[in-house]
Length: 449
Image (cartoon, rainbow, N blue to C red; front, top):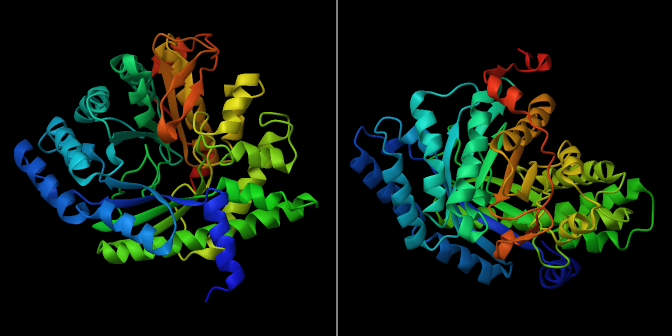
């Protein structure tokens, strides 16, 4: 039972502090859709997803109205398409089918135009990767991810080199829209199978036939709670943990109700402090409330490490199954505090890279000059992926080389994607390193059998 004080507190979190369920993501397995016919595979995918998800948006809206909690996005994730299409080589037919499904269901995004190439690539998987720019530039809601490394396999540098070129191609194909296709593409190390957040969501091979994963967010709630703390860092961490506990309980309530109505398994609640461009909904402002003059100042990484740890501890206490990427996100374009810090020069890509060693995901929604060479983008990817592999954590890169724009200008993406100041990049060339290809072996400590 909830006390009257808890109910009032939750109402205030929603109405004044931007607490929301960021997404209900329905994961759907496509393994039973595989055939050796492009046409038949696409037809089976359409029938399967529509049978599971045709009422997803309505059910999400109904739950939101009934319990009074905003549910911002309703999304679908699917089995990595490179696996599903391998028998028929029908990936382009599948992308058109998925685009049709996204429009007909009214969902916000559909993730899973994805490939797992962390050790090597088959000839077909390379062909699939090369189709990503076309897939993302000709559709509005389809998202793609590529896992290029794991702590067990090491880093597939052939895939890393190729992804730099693919990011550039995505940027060029959507040059009239601030290279928006790149915002729908993520390069991963140690990608997780139950992530509800885009652009990296896909349904892993070890998951059920239909699974509901819910992402909850509340940076404004955490900041407001910290405004009442006038103590040492132990008390700060405890406050964050207790607040994360309360936020996660809301997510579990929504997840269980959604899974019941969608006739799907309850997967996980992902408690990720995912910011928005709205003032008062910023992870950067949490760090500044803890005591930094600006995010990016010396001490930022330590503050973020404490925040991430406390969020995870609070979430795990509150929910029977916490997963996904739970922690704190630091996407530049989606966080008002990050944008301001980048504008003033307090925050640069090198500092962001250091911060990713202790938080969720990685270099996220960072706009860079459009003339950045492909090998430099591959170098950025390699550096971030190495952090994930060596530290046995998920890291990712979602950078946007904005065609025709330079450092100091802005890219305008709109909605939750926000706007981004274009950040300068070290352009000293890693071309010889990237061109060597091959595989960086797994670190010694990965051999734990």
